[in-house]
Amino acid sequence: MLVACMPALRAFVRRRVSDGETASEILQEVSLRALAGDGPRDLDRFLSWSRGIARHVIGTEWRRRRRERSEPARDEVPIDQIRDPLAAPDQHCDAQVRLKRVFSSDTAGVALLVRRYFDRVSGKDLAAEMGLTPDALRMRLMRTRSAARARSEKI
Image (cartoon, rainbow, N blue to C red; front, side, top):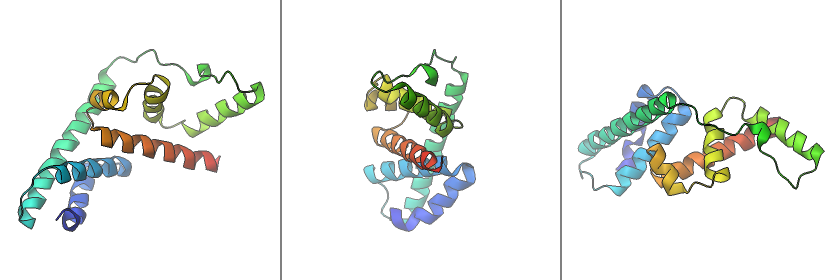
């Protein structure tokens, strides 16, 4: 039933969320919750039920974003201070320039990667902090890494 409702559900989410990547993440979270839940057996009721899940997930995402904007900026480590002690100086400079180019427009992605991999915050803790399920966080990390890879290949 979820597959049958997916086009209508995608259109519903897309009308409420302008960013395509965010809409995909929300749709994925809705799918996970719908598959984990015990929804109605009627197709029309299932679509209404899944739209309710989508409204809830969208609301959670907007609250998370408002909270993120309203929180004072933490003392985040600038990318200039992240160093690989084993890298040669010329490799370090090349890597630093490349990272700045790759992540120039995605500060939230950089912050997420730094919290997960440099600060070594567990996936469960980070997901709870962001108001996401661990699976949704894993998908967000995977998308951020693949987008960075795609951008770095263009540079």
